[in-house]
Length: 159
Image 1 (spheres, rainbow, N blue to C red):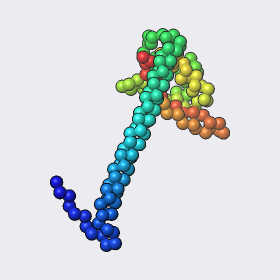
Image 2: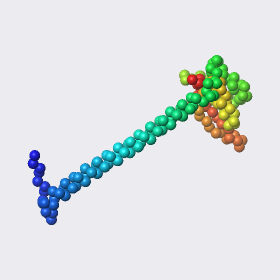
Image 3: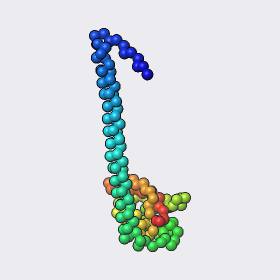
Image 4: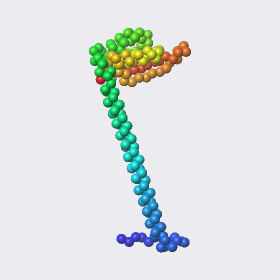
């Protein structure tokens, strides 16, 4: 195979042009190889980081599943809407109840004008009765200089 002739560059002798072009090609190959190698090194370090994060997550899940309070929950014997209604009555939150409605994936519970301790106690009591909050929307509502909470909860049966 015959290589094409290099063009003449004024002021540069022909015998210097060939080694310079080989040096330029070698430099380009070295830069590309170094770039690929450093990219692989970065990819490997990211992969190791993701692996460690995954292992940490699995450890947290394992610890959570082994918590003692999880087995103490009694299975839900009543309809969830009955459980929530009786909880609202028992906690004295009837005047705070805006709405309870059934959804395809659980219950929608709306409570308004709650103090933060009442809201927290309500959520904790739901857990003790075999229900969990799947999603929640909380809003702080100022009323007479006091910040009260308005809660929209989607409550489901704990598995």
